[in-house]
Every structure is written in C-alpha cells, then in structure tokens.
Image 1 (cartoon, helix red, strand yellow):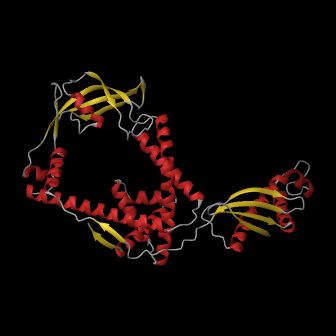
Image 2: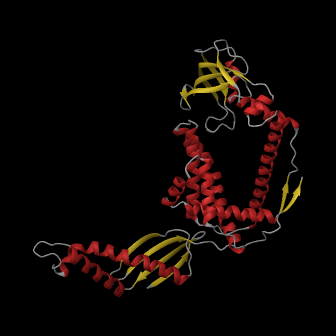
Image 3: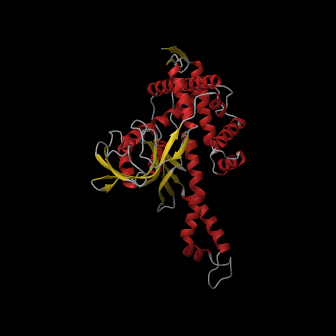
Length: 423
C-alpha cells in the first residue's frame, strides 16, 4: 500500500491511498467466490456456475465488496503510518480501479489540533462586591404578591393594572408579519406590556376591537421590520381585574414561611444567591475570554460546521416558537450568520483548550457523576430518571453529557485557581 498526506486549509488533510493489484485481486477472488456460492444462474445449479460467468454478471457487486473490505483497513493503516489523529469521519472520493488493477481513493479529514497551552493557573478576574439593598427585597415581595394575586372577570372598561385577554394580529403595509396570537394576556400598563400595547387598552371593554399604531423597536427580532411602523389589530376577548393580597403573615404562609419577616429574609437570601451565581458566571466568562485570546490554532472545519448548524437550528426553533413566520425567521437568521459562526468557532476552540487543560490536570468524570447529572436533568424536566437515562443511552448522548461535565469541572478548577479582585 502507498499513501501520501497533503495539508489543506486549517486543520484539514487529504490522504491519497493506493492498494497494490495483488491485494485487490486477492480480495476480488474472495468476493467472487463468496458470490458464486450464493447466486443462482440459469443453466447451472446454485454454487456451480463458472467463475468467469459470475465475474461477468456480478463484477460490480464483487467490486463493491472489495471496496467494503479494503478501504476502511487501508484508511486506518494510512492514519497509523502518518501519525494522523482525525476528529471527523473521512469524506471519501475518487475510489478508482486503475487499469493495472490497483485500487486508489482519496480521504479528506480534519485533524485534532495541537494546542500549546499558555498559563492558565492564577488568572486575574474581577468580581463585584455584592449587597442586597432593601428596595430589591421589597420588589421581590411585590412579585410574591403578584404570584398569589386573584383575578376576577369584569364588564367595566379596562383600567390601569387590569388585564385584557386578547387576540392579536400585526401588519405592515396591510401584510401580516407574524402568525395570529390568540388569548394573549396583556397588562394595562405601558411598562409591563409588549411594545406598550397595554396603555392602548385603557377604556376598552370585552368584545371591542382596536387598531394600534406601533413603531417597532430597533432590536425587533426580525430585522427587516425593525424600526418600521406596524398596525396591531387587537380584539379584547375577556377583561380581568387583578386583586393583590395584603403583605402580611398570611401571605408569608402561602409562600412557605411562618412570618413576613421570615419571607423577607428568604427573599434577601435568594437575591444574594442569584447575584453570587451571576458573579461567578461573569468571572468564568473572563477566564474564557482570556483563554480564547491567548490561544491560536487551526480549527477542524467539520466540527465548526456542525456547531454552527446546531446554533442555527436552535435559533430557528426559538423564533418559530415565538410565532415568527417562516420568511421572517430566515431573514433574521441571515443577519445572524456571522455572529453564530463566530460563536461556533469559539465553542470549538474552547473545547480543545479545556480538553488540553483537563488532560494536563488529570481531570476526569466518573459514571456516577454522569448519572447524577442525568438525575438533575430528569428532576428539572419532571421526568423519570430511568426514562431519561434510557433515552440518552439509546441515542448515544451520554458521551456528550460526560464531555460537558468535564468542561464544567475544568472551568471550576480554573476558577478555584484564579486570583479574584473585588470592585
């Protein structure tokens, strides 16, 4: 066997592999012999047809069998010979039977990049000095009141703080820009409702319709409509009056505490916990930004493409769930392609950096840790653990969970080693 390796763009490589006529002929003889035992040719008993007739009638089938037998083994031998470690399945092309009987083919693949690690211990990150002002606690208590509010239907005109349950359609130049949304709860308050439509509900009654002129914001999801004037056709199907409970011990008991003081302290602790969580995320992101900036190496194009396609699909699904029509979804995605491609490249790059650090620090993940993550996922989605575990195992997804856990543990390690300064 002969083979050559050629460097292409980035981490891509091209292998050209040629198998000798002797090896090909031997495999062809074995393939023909196998076919001869199984086929029935008119005029001959099964397994007794002459070899030349079998070759003439089943040469294409025989050659397919030769390729099936020889190509994978030859590809692996070439990898071993050249010390090539791929991170993708090969793209095979130009599988040709030469006039002299030799078999040649080309394999394109992506290499695992060589990552030369820069300093990663003792990185400096900036944290925030965290406090919980009293007004934040009171805002949280107001939300608790809202969660335990009661609603009652009313026939009077809508007042500030009421809710209109509405059917909504949006148009620009007479053409719909989203699917019709039915029974949408809109609070009659400019700050609390989408695009300020709530303020337009003041004075409306059940069964009334109104065209509302709105200038779409610059950050409107579908960029082709951003900043344009639209008409929202709103029909009030029901009106609801919101009745808030008193802020007292009785409300605290509904919320799981014995007293209002206990509920207030719980809110303070929750706010602090959330701030600490966000602060850790912010500092870890600083570590990630440093690692991405300090490391440079060729990325496997196939992995970047796969990650980009996954990000595109996720964004497409999110827009579709919001009721954005297909044309608007594609228009929005066109404007996001470069950002999503940059994000895909950074995700792939970070994977190899963290993988290198994990290897250097002997960071690994146990089967018990994978199961614990699956249990957490089952609890979050309110599913049975056994069902979630079976789904991930049958669909080959546990490896991805293990990789994500390893990345998380590596980032936790880097954070534990970081030097934190507080603003």
